[in-house]
Amino acid sequence: MKQEIEKVSLEFDSEIMAVSSQAQLEELRVKYLGKSGKITAIMPMMKTVPNEQKREMGMLINELKSKIETAVASMQDEFKQRAILDEINNAERIDITLPVETGVGSLHPRTIVQKEIEDVFVSMGFVVEEGYEIETEYNNFDAVNVPANHPARDMQDTFWLNNGQVLKTHTSAAQNRILKKYKNNMPIRAIFPGRCFRNEELDAGHENTFFQLEGIIVDENVSVANLIYFMKEMLSRIFKKEVDVRLRPGFFPFTEPSFEMDVRCPYCDGKGCNVCKQGGWIELCPCGMIHPNVLKEAGIDSDKFSGCAFGLGLDRMVMMKMGFNDIRDLNSGNLKIFKQFKVER
Ligand code: FA5
Image (cartoon, rainbow, N blue to C red; front, side):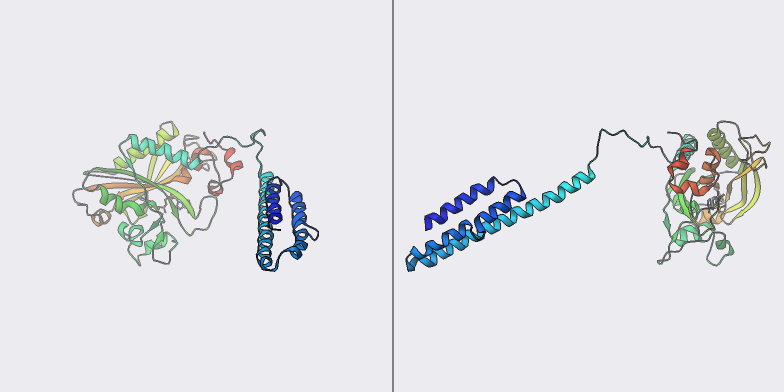
């Protein structure tokens, strides 16, 4: 009987190797474990086995049975997993011979204009710095001469975090850090573009998330003339023609005096058109002479050094240059909208 058990075991080993489908596996299972299968067929031989060997034979038969059950079950699992993978592969198959439907990508309009402006300023000796999006209350307000409880804090409706920090409301939040970084390396010429956040009523000209590009110049004898020169130069190079700017009085706690800089409409040369809303001038950039308190706060001698600063609304510049009418389109990520504008590759 022992020989018969070994024979059945070897037969099973070779037959299971040849199984290649779930149906064949089921056939094999029935052939060995079924009611009239090979295991059942061995059982009557027990009668012929001497009593002292019955126990050993019983164990051998049970071992064979469980070996067959385990092998069948594990192959069943394999077939199931293969079926799932086949299903996924079929569903996700990519036909690489199909024609490509998407076009070549391009940079975001804001990135294109930002890079152009950066290039102009870098060519004039400015460094490009980065600010943080999450800022301390100190950097966003106190360090730029906006103390707690001062009415000027109301100028910018702020998103406060639970830990007392803020989403920066303006790029000026980086001023103190940059002034400190370069104060022993005068003169300072730096620009710092960045994303800003304000709790604003949204409309075609206002977003809660928008971009500014700020610039500072600090040296001995810096004056408003420097500010006008650099802005005119930058704008003329961006619009590829000589542009005119004018200053109107403004108010910012971090500059004294403060101005609003307008640019003569580069599209109609001031005659009046849709871009300048027939006014001939476009309000573009708040600016001014850096307040002595801001210099002092960074440890700079405000009797010896003076500085000017500007905070360009980058999105507004992009809108003007590329012809967007609604700032919300810039944040929409809507390629159909972007394709309507003069977005260069
Ligand atoms: C400031 O943020 C000052 N920190 C700018 C500054 C820097 C002045 C250095 C002097 C010296 P203001 O809040 O005006 O200023 O914002 C500057 C520009 O950011 C605006 O002219 C506008 O173009 C843009 N801006 C402000 N709020 C929004 C908004 N909600 N959506 C889109 N653009 C905005």
